[in-house]
Structures are given as structure tokens and as C-alpha cells.
Length: 254
Ligand code: ARG
Image (cartoon, rainbow, N blue to C red; front, side, top):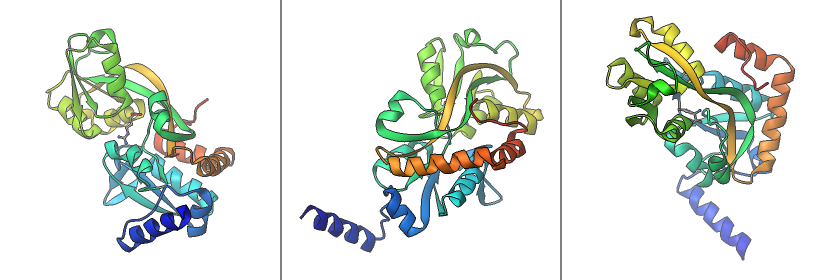
């Protein structure tokens, strides 16, 4: 009864053109295709360049999927919808620079970290460099991020302005509408390098975090297979080469 009911739902969903994802590993393997979701707006990790989805995490997922013997299908959606989509069976996995937090780990199963980084302060004002300097200031962050969480926890900013994308938070700083922006350390380095005209200056690292992809809560079969393939890319030099290409250094967690 239960099984046939499930089958009925699945058939109806398929007929309606809704794909059933977040599948157990054997279903993924059988279909030959991994459905991965990302934001596509977080340089240099996942972004669109000349109409093509790319970035360190996109290329790394391509490497890992290949090792898993799977083709890859990408979905791009707003950052806020990514983890929730795992619970709604809209895709098998998410890779979008999520820091591993206890709160998130209640809702999803994190894979092994694929890089280590942290939230960094950026400002046009040389006097805004440290956590202390943020007291009484207006700070821009992307909604739903660990940057927002940590700035809120710090509790000294006059105002924390939320933006749907990290690029919007950057624009607010560039336009002088906020005093500082907090984002990933490597995003900061890339922004400074590519936009010297903005006259932005990097400040302190506010906190560090381990960044990982995620599967639906309890989908340990898929997580284990991903972890094994990720470890293989870290062992055979392909991870190191990709990391060097994007960052000029190896960003794996030490
Ligand atoms: N590392 C931060 C976090 O865990 C930011 C992630 C932002 N990712 C993105 N695709 N915009 O929340």
C-alpha cells in the first residue's frame, strides 16, 4: 500500500513534469545523472561567464561527478532557495559555498568540506578594518549567509543591510551606501584584483569556516560516494590544479 502510493505520487509528479530528485545513491547511479543546484552568482566559486555557468565549485563538481561515473545537470536558483530545495526533492545536492553550521546541519547532510575560508571585512575607508571598527557602522551582507549571522552575533554595527545577492551587497559598498561589506575572503581578493577602480580595501578575517556541499538530510549514500570521489580529486592532483587556477593556492582545509 505504502509503496504503491509512493509510486503513484512519483508517476503523477513525472507526468506533471516535476522531477523527483534528492534520490538515494542507487537511483542516481541508475539514472546516470547527478542533479546539482548552485546560485551562479558568487564569484569565483559559482557564477555565469559569457552565458556559461562556471567557477571553482562548478568545475570541481564536474571533476567529482566524473569520478562518480555520473553526468551532471545544473539548476541555478537564488541562494535562499538552495538548501530548502533538498528537502523538497528538487535536486540531489547543493554546492554554493555553504559554511558548515549546526543550524544548517539540522536540515541537511553536509559532505566533506571542499575548501576552508572565512568572512572578511571590506571597506573604502582605511579606518574600517577590524571587528571593533564596525561599531556604529552600516554593513552590507548577503541574506541567509554566515556573514549575516556573524555580524548579527557581533552586535555592534549600527545597521546590517541584507541583499539578495552578494554582488548587490558589493554594489552598495561601491556606491557608498554602506560603510563595509562582509563576504568570503577569496571573493574579496578577486574583487580587489579585478576592480582596482573601486578603491576597496580588505580588512580582517571576522571568522573562519569549513565550506561543504550538501545532500538531503540522511542521504548518506550519496554523501559517502561524493566524499570518496572528492578525496580522489584531492589525491590525484586534479583538485590542486583547479585550486591553483582559481586562487593561485591550494584552498583545501588543512
Ligand atoms: N560562506 C557563506 C555562507 O556559508 C556564504 C555563501 C554564499 N554563497 C553564495 N552562493 N552566494 O553562508
